[in-house]
Image (tube, rainbow over all chains, first blue to last red; front, side, top):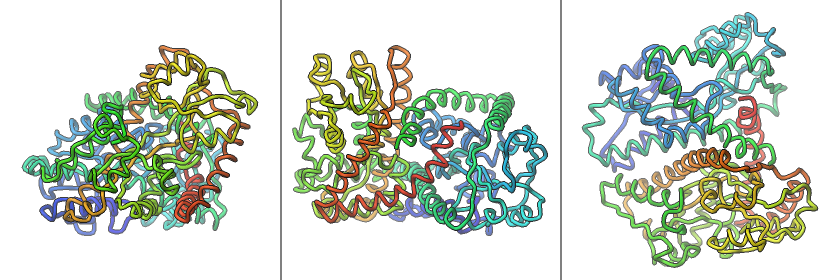
Length: 319
Length: 319
């Protein structure tokens, strides 16, 4: 797996998948979970599974965008689908077929296998009141979302997790995006950066199980089905666990600290949306498959938005 | 199962569960799905499973509130948890344990196994502008929510599904609550009752698999696990299918018809909430277990509301 031993939710998801496959197969199929402490290559899981160094891996598709731009949006897309919409797309809107159309080229069978729920937008030392406040602001925000804020005038900086608190304290960075309360509370960011922004950049990051294609194809049908269903159960379960642990952690944090929840101002959101759309168009030009994935997500999102607005959004407002 | 052959989503959920259990067990475990056309007792699934007439059933817990008030809110609670919150409660907030604390008394092992997503509030011939418009209004709205609107001055009427369209057309009823676009479109209500109200009464109805306790206990551990995971997968999958099919159906309906989406006015919502809270307090007094279920849901909902408001609600607004 890509995650250090004991990472809340993420390690649980890998361990749960392994445990369930073993139990459902009556012990015929046994999976050992290795953390980066052992394999030393958290962001090379795909390579190791492709080559057969490992038969399986638990990782996130968007870590491999350097290798294949089409992999990026199977994890999440800024301003894109929330987890319920994403699952509808994966299982009924053609997403799972597209995922494997991409991964078969990497000699891998892939399954969605875990979701963080909507991530928070990060901790800021100063309030963002308009696009003027973005200029040169140093933020830890990796990947596609980092490119979006870079285009909007911010300065995205890559810093190892263990050095983030000190970097924020000393002003090496002005803001830091991490995950959500259950993970953030241990990092201590809220003690030195009180503005906690709501999320726009990772509306439910999906993790994945990768399996070497020759190894998977050689399995009997019942074990193939057990793996597929165990991956789907863990995708579902981690969303429930993430929601639960974040809701509980947030209740504790907000009571003990003076945290100021903020939504980014309209003009900033408009600028980010524009930068994101341009970036998506550019990625779509890099490969035919990336174009297919982006087009498929955009098409379903248009329909999903309307239905979500008269159900989920309306319900949370009227309740 | 409780559902007629071919009912969108619901029949699929039962069939999918049966298919996956058979495939994962390599054919050792085979499940035949009977519709009410065969067993003639759609609302007595619990009795048939308890007695062993069937080893298993697919139904909804709230159909059995006459038998045991504690069963009611495992399906859904008006103004209560949405599906994401409900799943967090079931799997991490003690819900699954409470479900089985209730059902063991009926000689049954129970699993959540399907979700309709947030249901729409129904079709009305005239617009509801204030509580004045509720008085004597005849509506098809069954169960606990029917009691809520009854207390608020409406007249909830029970009519068999096959007679609903004619009843609405002739004015025997003024409004009808059904499910959502994918199911509603076939009923044709939108042609004669153009006001389509957003939902407050069933924010994600959960279905269940019931299994006779002696039969379940006699199974080997691997088959027990296969059943538990297959039920959970179908709970997840039906939510995705419901979201997908409703989003697509809604797009088609709104383009071809002059449907007016409305949210109930503030004063009506306030009145319904008050009636619902009073009713919940009364049900809680009927049994110690009902009180436990209601208290557990209320306690988690308080925490979940806050987290949902800065994630799901905020995200759908800013996107």
